[in-house]
Image 1 (cartoon, rainbow, N blue to C red):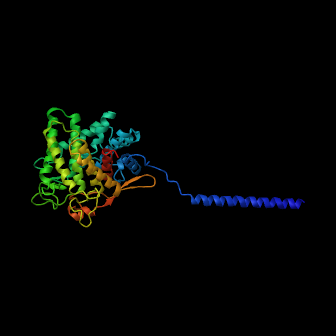
Image 2 (tube, one colour):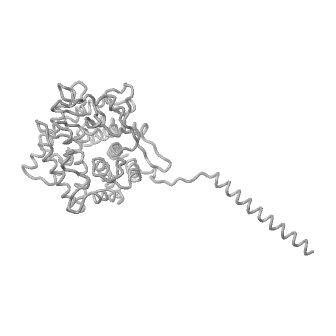
Image 3 (tube, rainbow, N blue to C red):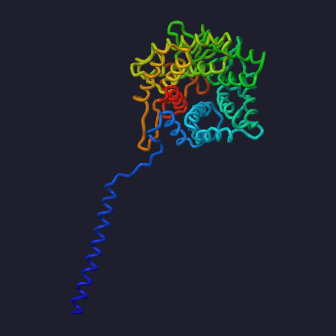
Length: 414
């Protein structure tokens, strides 16, 4: 009887072990069959402006490393994205956006107002752009270092080398050259600073100077046949890329035109209503918008080289298309452009969503087909040819595209 009892006990132990093993195997198989749950980083119920800004913060936790750089730096791309971030903060009132902006200035501006990685000696207009961040933060924080840093950038404008007729060189290392890019890099800051801190005759002189830069670009870079503006103009006509008669570069680069349009609509935020140059800039903006609509693709987008959409190698480019959408929308909303341009902006924006935006499983938003960089001259030499523009590196989420995309999204309330 005892033997039989032990046998039963042994069988029960074996059965239990087999059952546990079976359950474990079943549980393992069930676990393997279930798909892994992806953590949502960017909620899809937000507007595109906030979705892209959250994606940028995730990609670049430090705003000082925007533009895929390894070390913190003071540059124009930071100012571009951070001022878009300021608008997102204003709409959402989410503290993380303000903190992202503040952390950039806090890291790069010393207690004495010196700007890390910035060189006044380089006389580089690009470096003025992030001054917008300082003008944004100083009234909120009253930290004197931010004002002193802004004053340093303003002093650069006073010493910037100029062409014989008064146009700012784009950089000291690019002598006698005005680029469309430079109008956006320096002049919204120049106008904003003037409005806040200059008075009387000094303010009048500054406003006159700002308008003069737009007058010069129109005089020297505008192509009468197309209504488009060439990327650069060399007053000395010595550059290899410069037309020996006109001094202009050979082609109409989408992003250069985008910078110029953004410069116009943003400078008008600060130029006094009674300044005679205001009417001229609005006239330039209307001429600009009319020309661009002739080259808008059926997708709503624009090509890298604006007037050569049918040429091999050309492609629909994201940063220029985002900039034009923003310029048209803001211009129409402010009354600078006819209401019809709001429709053009909407078509362009939808074209971006349909063709150039992708969303990852975690909600991260990507802007694709952005020209990484393009310029003129330098070493290795950039000749401004068609082949040069279409063969420059293309990448996703370049801040020169994501910043304008956020601005366009905000202007269109998307």
